[in-house]
Length: 266
Image (cartoon, rainbow, N blue to C red; front, side, top):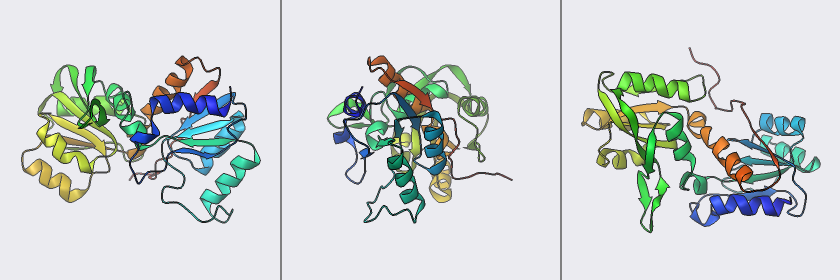
């Protein structure tokens, strides 16, 4: 299949028009006419992922996070990003990004996160688009049976890949939990939506001290704060499955390389 044909499948699932205006999604480098045989899925476009792609013989890397989110005037090999671009182009490896358009897709990043931590049944957006109630940020779902916050946190820790930071919990560990909201990546902006959603706990990443403390103290749902990378990693297999089920004849691989920014906890 050509790179163009692979991108058509990805963009049908993750429409670029649904990306935020500040985002940078789509093809970063690569010849659209070139044949693609192997596709590596990863969260971050970083050097270690580039090396994994080269070692495996990938023709395309699909990442969640953009390489150049804020644009650039140079791709010189004097910076880590520039060196990565040079390596990929030199070896004919394309790079494609699906970011906020994958966050809001159905199924998207938060659907995969919800399933990874044990939510079942129908999922609905935590903050739906005004014009599409089935797409939007975050997801709300139910556990198969009620549990406690402590037990749910332990289940979530098992369902997500291990990172140096693990999970942090805010709330009474004995609190009953059955209805859960999740959002892959930084979820500070969705605290208000979680408060209004009648959920028992909100699981996300990158929560800050003051907003989290005030949220719990004012009677909001319990909070679980996971590593940013870990909350988005489950989406990789979902994206790869969409590509495989489309009939596109390519081999896919999900990178298990931990690229979370934090490498050691004490």
